[in-house]
Length: 153
Image (cartoon, rainbow, N blue to C red):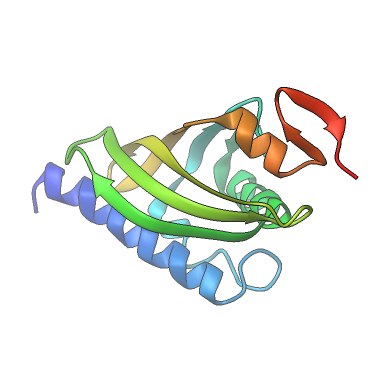
């Protein structure tokens, strides 16, 4: 297996394991164990400051906390379509998602572009770039949009 195929295989395997994790109930219900082999023990996930689950998440424990924060934020998080835009590390993946916020019930469709670094057969870094973090934050709060700061009644 070449390094190119290996990095892409790791990523596709992780996405399959992630789908199984969420199908089994996700954070608090399913075990993170099937996902762990795909991530380096010192993996780093960077999330934009404007998101409800912002910050830098480190290691397997950090990823478990991140998945719990995602589960607290979204009642639905469906990866509708994925395009793998590169085959070497760092991989570039464009994902179209459909979400429904747990607290407000609002739904959004948007793209996420991610760079994912794979070294020695494991994911070491993930950097997602969201199309509109203000719209995502607004969907998760009582605010209509970044320009409408008053709560809706």
